[in-house]
Image (cartoon, rainbow, N blue to C red; front, side, top):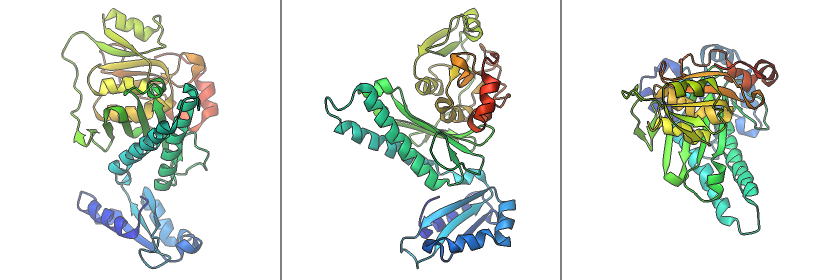
Length: 353
C-alpha cells in the first residue's frame, strides 16, 4: 500500500477492527530510508527480516512520508493474510483514473491527427502505462504482464486488457471496458472491470464478494429453464465440438466479438455461459476472478485454434452444455504467464476439451 505513515497506521487499525489478529499484523518504521535506502538495507540483512519473511506471506512497502513526519521515516505494513493486501476501492480508483486520462486524450484528438487504429493504440498505451505504474507502486514484488520491468518475486502477476471493444471506443459508443486482474500462480484471484460509457464498476474475487458500483452482487444460480443460453466467440467454428454440443441441446446463442463484454453478459445473467476456442489471457484473468466468485464454473485447456495462442475456455454450469467444471486442471494459465517457451511447446496443436 503506497501511502504516508498516518494513512498506513489507519489501515492497520482498520485491519484490527475486522477478523485479522493482532499477531498477524505489524508496523515497521525505518530510519534513513529516504536518504538512500540504508535503513531498508540494514533491515533486509537482519535476523528480524529473515523471521518475518519465513512467517508472513505479504510484505508491502509504503511511500516516503514527504515531510509529514521527521525525515527518514517510512512505514511498511506486514501481514500474513493475502486478502488484506488488496484494497478494492484503491484498485477501482486506478481503473477510473486510467479511463479519465484516456478520455482526456480523446477530447484532444482533432480530425487528421490520427486514424482510428492510431487513436486506439495511443489510448490503449495510455491506459496500460497508467495501470502499470500504479500497480508497480502498490505491489513492487508482483509482475505486470507485458510491462518492461524487472520480474517480480511474489509469484503473482497482474494482467490487463487496456481497452476491450476498441472499435466501439473509437467510434464514441458506450460499450467498451477496461479490465485487469491478479493471478496468484494457480488461479485468478481478483479482478476489476470498468465500463466508463455505462458508469459501471465491477470488482471481486476469491476473498472479495463481487460488487457493482459498490453494491453487492447476488451469486448466480443454476438456471431453472431447460433451454441453454450461451455467448459464443465471434471466431468460433460451427464444427467445434463445444458448438456442436450446444446445437445438440438446441441452445440459444449469440456471437460476441469482444471477450470482456461477452463475459459481462454472463455476470449479468443475460447468458449462462461462454465458449471461446482461443482467448487471450489478458481478456480472461480479471473477468474470470469475478465469475468464479459469483459461483460460475469453468474449464480451461490449450487453445485449439489460431495457432495455439491463448487458451480454450468454457464457462457456465457443469452438465449444461459443454462445461465440465474442472477448472484449469492442466495449469495452462500458469504456463502461459510464467513459462512462455514451455507454453508454446505444450499448446501448439493441443487437444480441445
